[in-house]
Length: 127
Image 1 (spheres, rainbow, N blue to C red):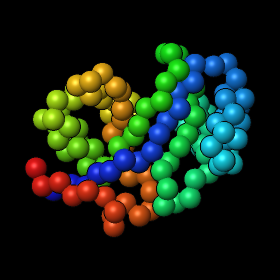
Image 2: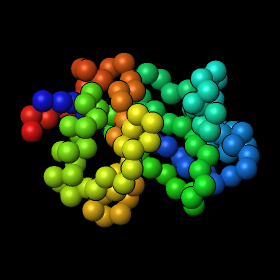
Image 3: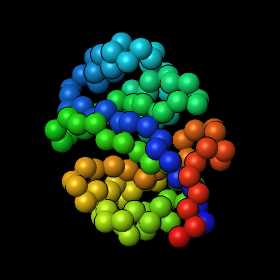
């Protein structure tokens, strides 16, 4: 048994000016940017969403700009296997998450738990 749910959205930007991209999306969506001193956040601008709302970040990428979603799970491998049974395919593993592709072509990631209310509000899967 494991749990998962929609964690949030990642706004992939093929840009040389991540700060400008972050500022645009911050202003467009009405969330201030959150500072992070973590080295792994250098390619991201984090929007300061409330703890009980979806996580949103702007990410610098080398592929064409798009938006993808993240699914948070307490057991990433179990969630990946569940989604594979539904027709998704594993594309790659990056750091602590797995990039997948839906049968309809959209890319998404399965990531570790992101929000503090996960345990109380995530879907429980028994397969």
